[in-house]
Image (cartoon, rainbow, N blue to C red):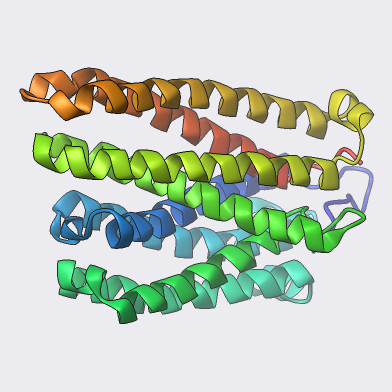
Length: 310
């Protein structure tokens, strides 16, 4: 892993740090949308593989994920050498980062995004048939695991006293976030605009159960990661990293309250859903939840480029 420690009195260019934070945020969002979207289609809504909006989400997520990985590698090289954003485009920056553990993880992630084109092309060509195919699901799961693992290798999860615990928690955390966020976005942009009560009655309760399990996994893994990375209650309260982690936790808590409202609507109203207008409160609730989730991902990208509290 690259140590974000200034080599001189001036330190790295703030513009490089800001660009690196943005690249991380795009990378996390793209990963969640792509893997969560694939899982949503395979497990809950195979028919959605022919839906134009769902396919657009997958294509955009794949492109953004691949490009953000390449950009992150260059920016890491520029950061380590205290260069400028323009230096991130040079071969020297990539040579610098590829000599580190983080660079190896980024190179592996880039190759896996390349392999993901096979998975993406198959579902775009085969539609619902591909989404229901056991072979396609196995291939998607294998590529997804690789992307999740190489992403987890890049963060601070292995820096504490028990690296194995941190890496396992990081993997669980990323899986939970991907299932929650990817499914939520597909639900928002692809399922709800169709306003088909019969379809909603099948897909929404199934997603609600999946999201509940994902959130439980995120919470458990988050506790392990906080203990592993921050190291103490004092570090949580008196370091920038710890305070940012508390802000992220507060946003997650607010998101869960909004999600609980959506879940109550599903439990009490969906069975009797009639006119399309009756779905409107649920649409607003899900849209608010989506915005809050994006804020969580933004906080996560800042945490990755910050020094841990311990």
